[in-house]
Length: 383
Image (cartoon, rainbow, N blue to C red; front, top):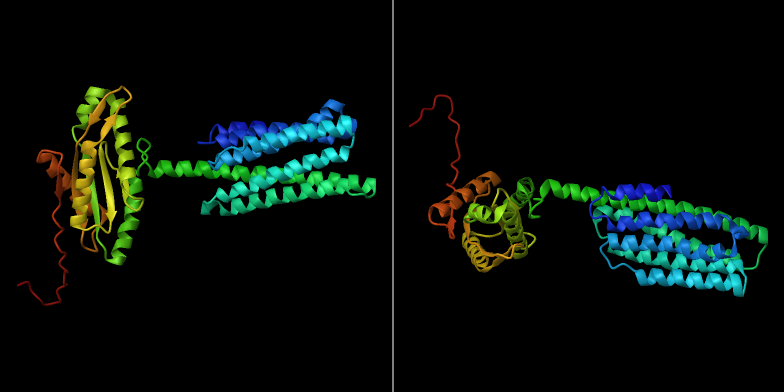
């Protein structure tokens, strides 16, 4: 119960933690079921019947939370079938054919099914940063499933009663410790989700979801370095939504934010993953095009300009806006071009589009070739 409370408090601080909420709920039936198991056959008949489905509902919630965390469908049907089957079987082996080992075997079979499902669900955890956590949780789920089968066999196979009870108690203790180990692994998943969200906040624009200035600068540095090694060009588009101030004045800042969100989404969908999109100012966005020369960059910019011009931007107020876009283009043709220089030239070209009437494209002039400087020897004079 303490774990349920602590996990419930923790998930309130973790973004996108719907799966973790199921984990917090799971600890309630797991705690109650474990307590009832510890009471043995001293419980009233009704609680002996309810003990197995209560415990299995906790395992089912762990599975449901894991699937939700992995953004997969929640297996309510599977979990519900296991719990309902355990309820019917427990009632049968309590009232019709009283046989306590059979009730334990039913519980063990349910745990085996749910843990195998959790084991298979972890295949969808493909993040390389979480590979060790995935292996750890897979080992825990596999061990719980195997021990559940062994425990059922210990009780069902004929052997000395005292020895069977001792082995059953030992296996139950080990499985409880493994469940606690699973809790630790799930906590690592929660921490990873939180760290990922914090990392996104440092490099992503919270309004549009594209790179912010810091993020695009870091990504561009890697792209430019790679392009220098390969000797291939890189182009930069500096895009500015025309008359954006008028949009804010007419529809308010909330309407302006909706426009920026929609425009950022349009850019993210229009360009491939290798083509970096970032927001560097209020309504100014940039797009880095690896491998694009001047002709390709101009054609790409024109395609984007036409798409924006034809795209209706719907607002929640019911209004639909048609925007235009001014684009400045700069191309890295020299291996020593830096990000700052590329951005400066693209901004200068963008300024020229504004001066020339907006809704157009201007390509920045190529940077002048660098002239190597020769140091004068002692005694030499300038010509």
